[in-house]
Length: 489
Ligand code: NAD
Image 1 (tube, protein in one colour):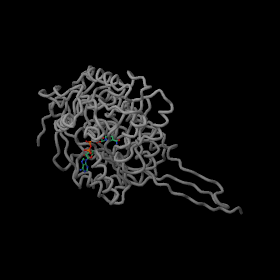
Image 2: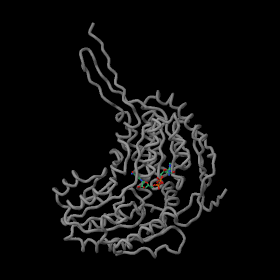
Image 3: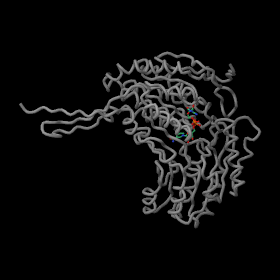
Image 4: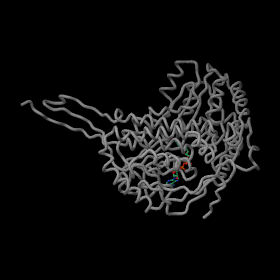
């Protein structure tokens, strides 16, 4: 088995029924994208591995669902404490296996911790409704009840945060939960589960199965998995949505994105340029909330493109462990190649490359590409329509904010969008007309705090109840209505 562990991590294991066990099938190396060094090895779980986790989850569910809600949240308080205590170490692990900067990794983990904090409020979040005298001598009460074993399948780009969009809520509501993290960066998740082990959830309540496509298919087909939460690319999100539904499961599936910024002539242009570039390039553009198409009112277009170019040129590309770095490597050499191909396609289709990062990282180790800024892109161009997931942004002039919103709404995706303006009326127009689930005015990245759900529309989301907060609590529970008649004696 290829296993060249040059840094300090070893073989990643599954966590099933409170025990660490090796997955049954061969898997792949976990590679540091900044150096190309193997950090560890992850095996893939077989159908039998998944069966064992579901069986343990079902067995644990029987007692866990009856455990008083106040007792169910105590391990979450402990997990929050442990995550805070180990934040530095988790941050470094995340940087090594993913490639983002230390600041980005810390920010990601903070949002993960925030979700644990919100789920600690489950005694309130789980309350449904009660009406006295709903009919003569009748009171009616709605009660939220857990459903059994849930699973979540998560992507590579936020391995420390996205599992926590689901896990704390699933277990706080009384379900048991199985996580299938991305096979590309499973190390921070393994560490998270070591802390979960320390936090003393009962065996089988929270479990980890590593793997890839076959592992996901086994979860999707398993008759005793009540529901699936998925986050990843749109084709896989669609597949998961359809297959989970065909097997009678609840499903929420978040897909890929193509996000837009509209810049009004009234905006503070320097501020808008700084926030736009940071939104497009943070995490090397490997973010579902990255705004990488910039629609600028034509009267300020030339000035704004100059500001974008100046901001883009300021970026420092390098290993995320270096405090100077603002743009880290891409996740794999294959993905780097794919992003480079998008840059070539942009040129072939007629856009002008104002900042050209193609020479950065061409010959060295690691999957680096310098930031690239295109101007004069058009809505028909491939780089305007497809998710690039790399440090590439494109600007185009539009007649007005209204036209910018109209161009944006032609996208198949609907994850996020931002508007920079000083006009209340433009902001209101944007709020009412923009077709995306997460909208921001005068902020580069529309990332909701954990106490709001994480939106998504069109090809960016399949389902109805989203991740985080009250939406996910509803996803993980079923509402039973009790109707009681007690006539007065
Ligand atoms: P991906 O779709 O390749 O993988 C996501 C998960 O699905 C992984 O756990 C992977 O093992 C599994 N998987 C991959 N192919 C599969 C298949 N054919 N059948 C079953 N399971 C499969 O996504 P990724 O490259 O890890 O992540 C990047 C994508 O995720 C981007 O498109 C990004 O926009 C999206 N994303 C979306 C959100 C959101 O909130 N909408 C958040 C983060 C990332």
